[in-house]
Length: 439
Image 1 (spheres, rainbow, N blue to C red):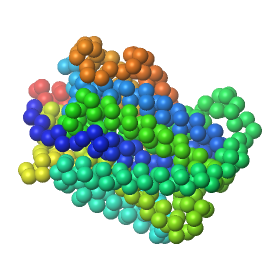
Image 2: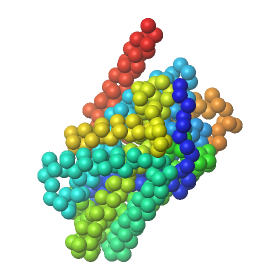
Image 3: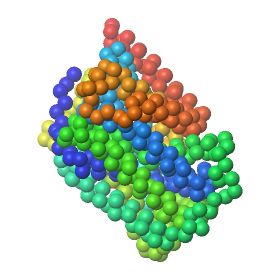
Image 4: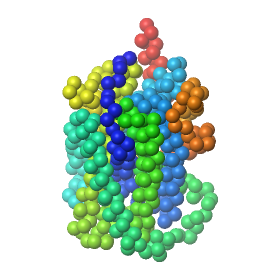
């Protein structure tokens, strides 16, 4: 195992900035109409509340992990340490196994959404959309190819742009708020029968995609100052801040645009600003949405590039991924690999399927495995040695397991089965590899 050589140069402000721009991204602007359509009316707000609640519950798990094990790689390190010497290597390998597919898919989903909104300004056919999304991945890789101290400063600038843009959308919409539109519930909207809960589960798959990233700061655990304090703070500040922004944005949109129209819009925020201020303002708004998408992917690629690095340091992945740039001091090979894979995926896949695939592949190992693991870690380390402890332990961990299982079912049979299948295949590959290495 090689020694980690990253420097702790990220402040709390920079950690929060990276987390929040990771979370926002293109997600809320793309999935907002989808969620309205699934729920069939303004009661779609319940799916955004449900997503925020799950993120907060799960946030306790990642805050405890991050404070106890602040190292590069986040979930990889957590699973390895939580499951002990016998099973930890398997669980951490499975995390890398699914990350090899889902991390580039996450980046691809953002770049695909970017190209979708870009087509509001520049007419694009299917081929040119794919070219635009691939070009974005290349640009991000180039921008991230530098020292972490410089990256931290860039993240704060991007974060300010994200908050300013969201504030414009929200203030503009709420200043023209029409309660009759916002609360135009169809008959039976709050009829809590089986159909409501099925729709809520399916809609929550979409909203959770928009909340994902609250744990991103853990991937950078080896580069954050005072991690035992700043990682939990960054996680909860990010979740609460983004939840407030998302909920306010829902009312800003449906208080101006009838939900029957909003559910079919491909450019919902552009439509909102066009309705309020005209086409020129809508074009500016679209540019700002693209800024947000760019900022989010910047944070996502930064965090994920540290995971193969951490696994390689541990001897559980290709050793070349552990290489650190000789002068800029960041894992450059890992970053280049991630950029290349995301570039290919951005050319191959469509947005609708990518969101479900991302969640289906993550849930078993990263989320359910992580929730079980935090209870094992407490037992192994003793609660007295853990700097941050979740409230009402172990209830948040148990609740997270139940809720994530329901989200996985809600992705649909095919995606849930593929997530399970990829995990089983990873287990087979792991044991075959171990047997070969023992010879």
